[in-house]
Image (cartoon, rainbow, N blue to C red; front, side):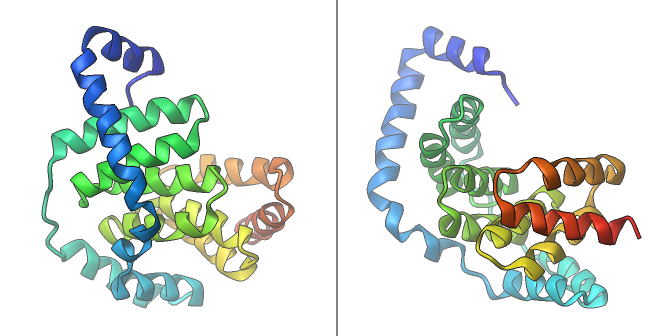
Length: 212
């Protein structure tokens, strides 16, 4: 991840590049209302359903199926460049603006799970919970073992009042996490510090189940 300072230096040194980014941002906005349809996928819906049901065998099978699906690369250079602009805005907590860059980056290369997740996360932080869900589902379709995307989906479900579904996603995220000790620590801290009571309740149950 390039630092905020580095992103600003890029703009200072390469005004043409920044003009390109500004144009990309303006292109993204008019198409925003129709974005949800881009991310619909029966395969990822079955994946999430298996996680919610606690069907680990089915979950593993679906993970294998999704990982084996061919993924057509788009314009990776353009996508990653737009992603960097979005990350710089995220660091400044300008989530709605960042989402526009991430959305255009996802259009440029729909096979990049990080970009899809960044889009979902920025929308979630901007308060656009319903719009965040399909973006996170897109990330899971690309990378079904991506723990951070499962965690974001859990937060989305909690904010939507889907407590049971949120807990299941957090448990799934923990199962896929590379560092489970750190993951549990993050859950524990957010269970008492998050500003959404529904999120705190969901994480408290997840933590309790993981500590049994």
